[in-house]
Image (cartoon, rainbow over all chains, first blue to last red; front, side):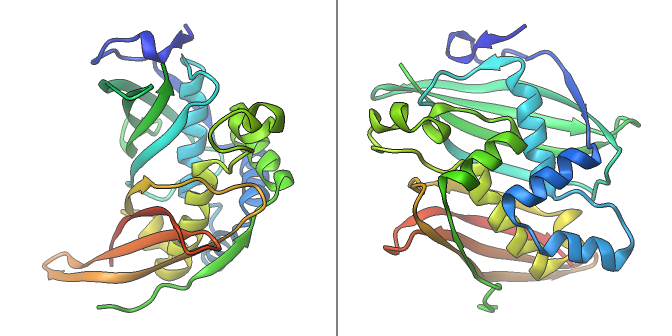
Length: 135
Length: 129
């Protein structure tokens, strides 16, 4: 269920989400970010690799289905670890939790931890983001 | 150590920000609604932080290839916002190298600057070669 994130308590676990790295979405992403390095590398290696930041962006999009960020929310920091190269067609399951919640000035400072796993359950992505939410 | 990563400049536009919003599903009005954004402290729309990180990731892919895709780590802070009409420069350099039994590990300072030279993103990337 979609919830206003600033109303949640530290430790809250969001519902698990999942998404597929479909080729159309990846092409749209590559065009949007004008990434020339990844397609060149993938072609040289004969792989259908997905840009790691696209995986992170799609993971965040899937998590946004489970939380509502008010208009004016600002991304404060980002930590990411890419465990292995992912290819189009792979299915990623995501879980996320609220790891920090405090107030600073006119904002809530919230941190969300997240982890993505492939179909075998192996971790492929881990991250933590902080977001400043207007109070 | 100290080796420069391949820097690049990217000129933003509202069209590019809107395109990223469609690709990422992030339609926060601070990025895509000029009327809303004009009422915020930014005075106008700003690029998604994740769009700027995509530019950083392109640089790291160009520099380290598959080592970035598999085993790469990034830890950054957003220090400023990129306005929709700005040109940003992505860059970095190798800050530390450690040799070990499992190979070499590199830590790089990475950054994104606007055309005034203000730091918008600063942080560290790590790869195992």
